[in-house]
Image 1 (tube, rainbow, N blue to C red):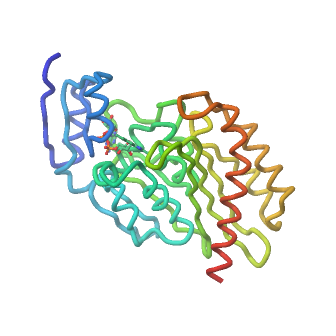
Image 2: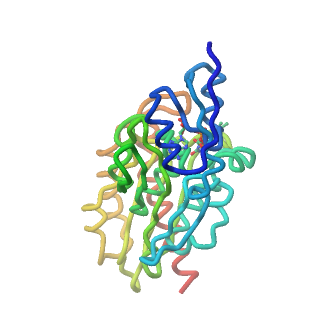
Length: 288
Ligand SMILES: Cc1cc2nc3c(=O)[nH]c(=O)nc-3n(C[C@H](O)[C@H](O)[C@H](O)COP(=O)(O)OP(=O)(O)OC[C@H]3O[C@@H](n4cnc5c(N)ncnc54)[C@H](O)[C@@H]3O)c2cc1C
């Protein structure tokens, strides 16, 4: 095995140029996943491009259009306490708080997690529910990809080899919304068996905003915007929710793995969705 060369660029353009010059180069953010993969000889990068001196990637900023821009290098522990994530957008801080353990949350970054895209990872589920966008810098300039189009298949994203995630953009939370992120893991700190993110708002007894995303039950987070829309204007009704959950189960494509069987995951979806919606309703009740 040859030793990887190590670079510490200071700008996004320099990172992209280094990535574009060598297809076996890898950028390293927190190193939580990459170093583990290198130790297991699953990847052997020719060059390691550290992101730690790229200032543009470190900030959390509220943009003029009300969207929150979270730099790719923002660590999980800082997403947990980000005061800018309010109301329904708190699903993102809740998801960050359930990643692994305090050591990994101090190391790992949001850009690293989204770029690595393990289908059992927590952020993608929350980002899909929020309608977030992934900001990317590549050899042909900068672009923005909605979370729903970014996660394509098992371990496949919209990233080209020389692309760098620069930030995650989160839209303003729906007015009066609450967010609930639920994760079932075999032991605390493990990757999830199944996850659900719910963002909901109500006017009296009627639902007036709903976004539900399910993770760990297929290659990408599952969202059904038409089925969500059909629940708007109605109450949180058991029969309607069961019908909604049945559609999510039909759209799921889980696998058997070391954590759980596919059949078990399908059983979990309706229970998890009902539980998260109940919790969101209770949270909205407490706030009113
Ligand atoms: C023991 C353990 C338990 C874990 N448990 C969980 C869990 O419960 N839930 C969960 O969601 N995750 C979990 N993870 C993954 C963890 O969240 C990692 O922090 C994350 O997946 C990678 O973040 P990182 O910053 O360390 O990235 P790195 O390890 O540095 O990089 C990972 C990959 O992403 C690429 N990359 C890094 N930054 C960018 C960027 N800005 N643009 C494009 N590509 C980039 C790298 O080249 C590399 O291929 C766990 C990891 C470990 C080791």
